[in-house]
Image 1 (cartoon, rainbow, N blue to C red):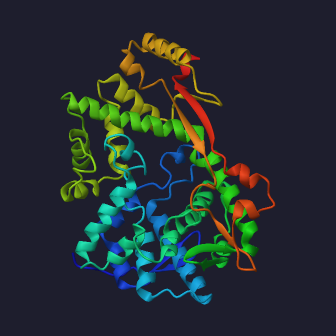
Image 2 (tube, rainbow, N blue to C red):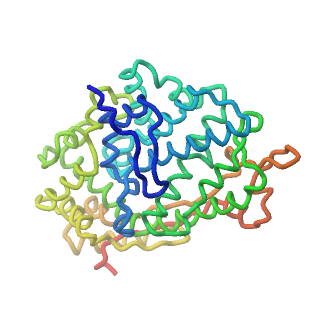
Image 3 (cartoon, rainbow, N blue to C red):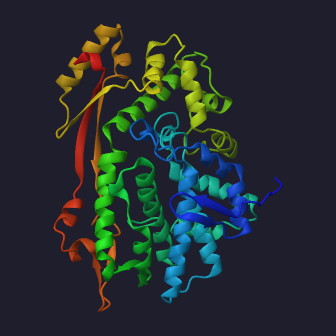
Length: 409
């Protein structure tokens, strides 16, 4: 493919102008694999709750790369040696870290692809691009996989305080209008340092870290785990599962060629070949929306009803509980649904189901966010903080939900 290499500056609504650092990164952005991210929503079904949440994985990837370059600049200023090749590799790794997301970000990996998550698919894309670009992505992949000898570089890409989280919290806050998630990414990056090959935050940045952790917790409850978004995503997953079930039984459903491939084939990580990857790269949100608009005309009650619910935002009732829902209550809702719509129990299970969500804003058991004191000591932020609730935020909170048709009240 002939490279156009015209994209030099992007005007981002969050950070202003983002400069593309070099030709290799510009060519990667121009590649169809990456351009597809323009058609993958960053927040799945959240636009049904927050109408402004129509930003894409493309926005997020560029924003995370912008923050990565800022972080490298700060660390170099503080005497941390980062070579030009390492900087380029960091920019490539963070740029491509989400390239494996499917339609509506998480819908594919939980429905019609078996036991394959977006991180694994991202790595497959990166390895394929590495072949296309004469192995110039090798260092980026090594850092991405945490196989490079300088461990703090991987932490910039994936840790409890990485450029991924710093961008998506601020960006998602901006597009949803939920101001509680507006973290001060510039301040946090300005406080970064490295001690014993580990990423640390200077002690005077403790309050910014506290706000970051609290913002993350609030964004999860208020946005990412919002009950309406939750039930909409569950309906989307069930719609795709029903479509696959019908296809397996010989029903010919209208869908794009790429979507039909995944409906007709059982794809696992072992069978995710180059050809499968190329087909996956042709899938985006529009394939699903287009299919939904056709499926509302199908004979199958389950499929057409699920599609209508999503398109018209006429969703199931969802109730949140502190304790698991009893099997008796679930069975009662299933029986009511079976009788009302003349369904089998298997069909009713598409409309009545339970599950759980969890929120853990900070983990003390896993690669903690560490503060560097003036005396040179390194301490876990939760232990150094005078905010009692930081330790509380490290506790996992689990909530349970029950979904069922509204008319079954």
